[in-house]
Length: 348
Image (cartoon, rainbow, N blue to C red; front, side, top):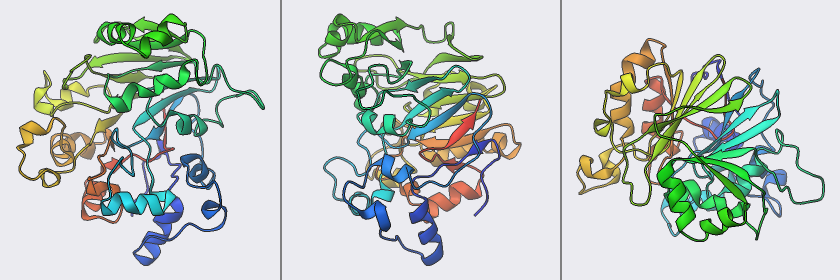
């Protein structure tokens, strides 16, 4: 197993399972406190992580890596989901990213997922929550990609029944903002000033997050039933990270993928499915997501030349790459790509 690039620091909640897997070819049961009462959350798993060198200056942290239904997936009893129910180390949260600015102490979220409550726990070390009380300002803002369930339902946690924030900045496209204003329960968040919607044109001026970091909304073709879809290009003092959790196949973009990623150092890309084998009977062009095997083919030259690092995110529960010992995961690693890990930090 090769070491990850030095630019990315790995904080892997599943480390105990991975080590046991490498040692004996199978999953180990959780031991000690991890198997006790109240265990099983991503925050519990994060507590077992070994110390890692933190990037100097601003960085992003992966706080979720799988598709909207999570792992275990809602209502699914497949072998992978059942294994995740038995072993908390196999659980994964819905794809989301945090932007952490240590100098100013600001923390931003990209997407508000149904797993928001656990994802805030994963940021406890970089936030300053009040002791013994509910944090009414848990983050400094949220940047939304679109209105599919895994990407905005977590906004509800900022409402009256839960954290009851005040004027929390939420950056989104004009179409997304109109959808939130016109439909409950999101309209209550706006009316009660729990959130402050700030419209950003796709492809327009970037959002200044502070500390030399800006976020630029990039249009992404997708099935836009309620709103349009964007990815977020996070531009830091030294590096640029592009977060695209949901998109149609790359042929739907208006330019070749390597051109679309020009100037990007680390791409966090939609990897819902590994290959058509997960969806028997469906044509590739009907799937509505790029396949990992296709993404690797398109970006192999960029990765081989050292111009780009690629992390795969938003994996469906059917995706064999979720199993680090699978042939799919080994092939991804062999080709110089990687599946993103919850807790992984990438310097900006």
